[in-house]
Length: 244
Image (cartoon, rainbow, N blue to C red; front, side, top):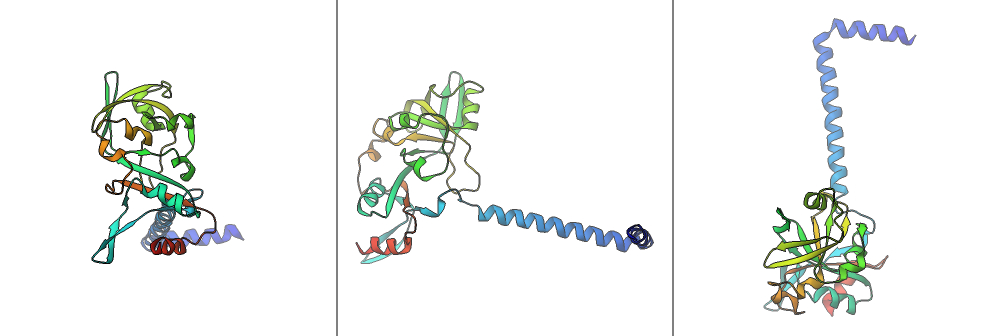
């Protein structure tokens, strides 16, 4: 019976070739478009999603002008995160990030420029789901230490072991950094792209960072992320913060 239906279908297709081709092509295009749309939707829905991401928030600041608050941006002070964590028990962790663009790495005669990096507190790894795949996180609390993504480490050192190696780096000033860890590459579907992290304590020793090193409420050059305890109403916490 099934073979009989196939024969009828084949005869119909060959008898009406143009009509059949148009239908088949239309069906194929429709399926392809559906698949592409679903892949795009899936990509967008996974943007900035990771284990525990529902508890992580980026701090955004408004500014007081004439007794009113006007919209600001996501750049905060280096005291913002530590102060919020201290004042609000709902906030269980914070991390400060200071973006570094176009860092130059020198390894022997090899010169590499990398546009995506940041100074970061070691608490970065308590907030974002990207653990070390090599190295020791305790060492990242020391000044002049850094963590590289797997791809950047291979670009700089090739097949050599990167952890424990020292590099000359150039940004506002020259410094020597020790590689203390390697992480997997950051997914592309995130707003904060990094290929290297430098320990936040380096801000106190790096030439050119003097103006940002001292804790203050005058230079908002940092991005602050906080992690709140589970089942916390963040909107209520925001109103509480505004009131206080």
